[in-house]
Amino acid sequence: MQLLDGKALSAKIEANVANEVKNLKNKTGLVPGLAVVLVGQDPASAAYVNMKKKACDRVGFYSVTHEMPEDISQEAIENTIKMMNNNPNIDGILIQLPLPSQIDTTKILELVDPSKDVDGFHPYNVGRLATGLDGFVPCTPLGVMELLKEYDIDVKGKNCVVVGASNIVGKPMAALLLNANATVEICHIFTDNLKKHTLDADMIFVGAGVINLIKEDMVKEGVIIVDIGINRADNGKLVGDVDFDRVSKKCSYITPVPGGVGPMTISMLLSNTLKATKAHADERD
Ligand code: NAD
Image 1 (cartoon, rainbow, N blue to C red):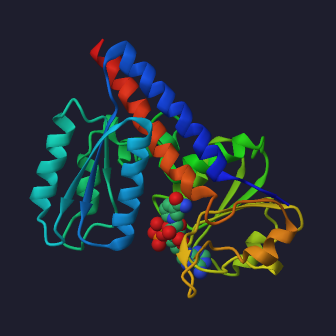
Image 2 (cartoon, rainbow, N blue to C red):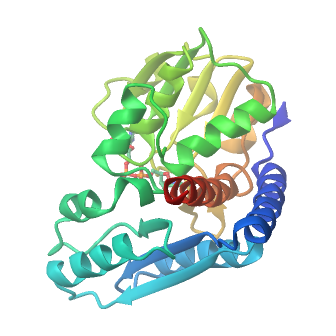
C-alpha cells in the first residue's frame, strides 16, 4: 500500500505558484487578488477561510475577506459581489458555503463573474466542465486529479465509483473522471446496496461525510481509494469516510486524512486564482 501524499504535492504546487507570482509581479506589476465572502459565525467555515487566507499570504497574493453577519440580506451580499466583479484588483471571488437559509445561494453563485469564479460553481463553468471545455473546475476534485497525475495513476478505462453526488465534490469529480475516459458510476444516499457497487471498483472516490462508510468487506484487493471526506471523530481527531486501518491493507494506493485531499483543495484554489489573473492580464493587453 502506498499513500497518496497531498501534503507533499501541495507544498510543491505552492512553491511553483509563489514563483510565478514573483515573476508576474516583476514583469507586469500585477498581483493576484482573491476576495472571500464569509457569512455568519460557523467555526468550520471561519477555519477554512483562515486557512485560505494564510495560503494566499504565503504565495504573495492580495486577499480580502468580507465578513458579514448571519442575518445579512440577499441584496447586501449581491452588492458586495457586484463590487468585486468590477474591482480590477480582484481576480478570484470565493463565496464560503453554506450560506444562511434566508439567502438564495444559486442566485448568489450565478452573480459571480465567471472569469472570477475560482471555485468553479457558476453554471457557466459547470457547463464547460460537463462538455470538456477549459474553465474553472471546483478545487477539491481538481486536486484529486492532480494527485493521481503525480503518482502516474491513469483512470482511462478503469471502473471508478464516486460515492457522494454534491455539486462541489461528487458531480464535478465524476465529470473529470469521465472526461479522462474512466467508466464512472455515481452513488449517493439513495443508492441501494452500496457494497455491490464498490466491490467491483478499481478506484473509489468517496466524499459523503460519513465516518467508516467504506469498510474492508466493501472493496477488492488492490483498489485505489481517494478519501475526500473530512469528519470530526468522537475523540476530536479528523477522519475521512474510510475505515482507514482495515481498508488500507487491501489498497494499492490510498489518501490519508488529514494530509491527502484537503491540502490539495487549497493549492488548487491558488492555482485557479493565478489562472484567473493571467487571463485578466491577457484581456487587458
Ligand atoms: P454534501 O452533504 O453536500 O453531500 C454528501 C453526498 O454524500 C450526497 O450526495 C449524499 O447523497 C451522499 N451520501 C451521504 N450519506 C451517504 C451514504 N450513507 N451512502 C452513500 N452516499 C451518501 O457534502 P459535500 O459538501 O459534498 O462534502 C462531502 C464530504 O467531503 C464531507 O465530509 C466534507 O467535509 C468533505 N469535503 C472535503 C473537502 C476537502 O478539501 N477534502 C472539500 C469539500 C468537502
